[in-house]
Amino acid sequence: QQQVKQSPQSLIVQKGGISIINCAYENTAFDYFPWYQQFPGKGPALLIAIRPDVSEKKEGRFTISFNKSAKQFSLHIMDSQPGDSATYFCAAGRAGNNRKLIWGLGTSLAVNP
Amino acid sequence: NAGVTQTPKFQVLKTGQSMTLQCAQDMNHNSMYWYRQDPGMGLRLIYYSASEGTTDKGEVPNGYNVSRLNKREFSLRLESAAPSQTSVYFCASSGGLAGGDEQFFGPGTRLTVL
Figure 1: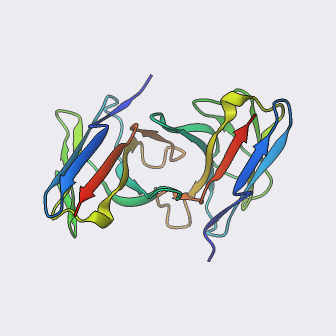
Figure 2: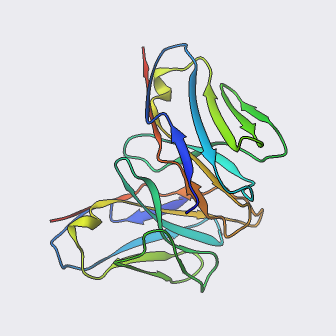
């Protein structure tokens, strides 16, 4: 079965530090790689997404790095803040393919003040 | 715009009871999805509907049925609830006129089956 493997399962970072979450996928046909952020009691919300024609995408303090040959992508949160404490999910899919996504199991991030 | 709405927010059932979870979106999206979220299990796709009039099984369809009532509404039915169906259920939608891939999620329904 197609999988997206996400690590670590949980992460504790000090305020101002860098949070790094990694994902690996198997299907080379995937061409859409989003990251979702979920706060307790809420539904997930899209944070940032990348397509394989670029190796990096940055939006504010959030950056996706993409390594096509290794079939890996990662989320970097610079200057992490307590408000970033949430669960982060990576996903992968084929754009337009009924828009189904294969999801990682999630990373619980806690940023200590 | 309300986005994706789900009802009810909370529900407690006894084993064997039935219920329908309702979902509606006002973004004119073509695709809609039902997920369940359990601790340590991430988001697992139950059923999805690529367009009005079509539905397909996802990763964990057993014990569930769905109806795509119209473009806006996608319901999930538990015919005979079991304790293993205790979970948080999320509805999502995607694919408006711009053809976007982003999935928009509702606030979830927290279901407990005793």
